[in-house]
Length: 146
Image (cartoon, one colour):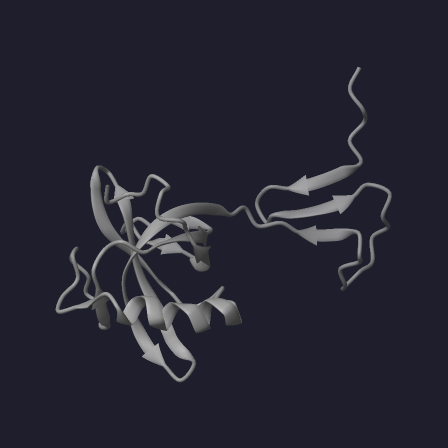
């Protein structure tokens, strides 16, 4: 026999409420939680935009519909360790143009550096919505450009 459900979930807003909670007009109690579905995807680093703290943005690509394509410019999720490590790794791979079509501006790098990207959804245009950097990946993992 299954256990009774103790939470009510609103699939449209992504909120969850404990069933024993009381309604409080005009405010959200601690019994409510906002839950956003998120996905992770390995991506190859195409390039970067330099900034005061080393890098400002990363341009990334991944395999989509059988082709490697530019999918996002990452602006969030960088730890202080990643911000310190990335400039050295990227500067050693600088090249004259991106290895896949990318309309964004930046300093381009040769393929070979991979990162994990967290995102909320795919857009109709084939881009990642709400994408953020989750960390560098080890080179021995199977990646989209191999």
